[in-house]
Image (cartoon, rainbow, N blue to C red; front, top):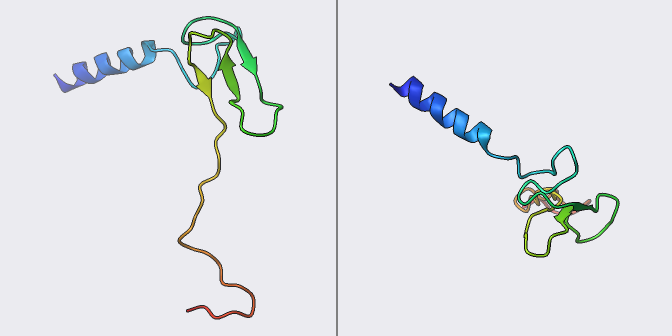
Length: 80
């Protein structure tokens, strides 16, 4: 029985659209409209954005994780 449930769950997941990028045709995976391609822009812009004002689909750039816990010691400074 668990194998059948796992197979059913896998089929459901694979049937859902990939919302992390536009379709191969350059369309919004949520509503099918055209998308803005902002990959060349610098600043606080979504990488991909749906052109349909009623659709709120966007993909934002990933920023590196800030590691505040392991700061290196300053040169010549004390480490404690």
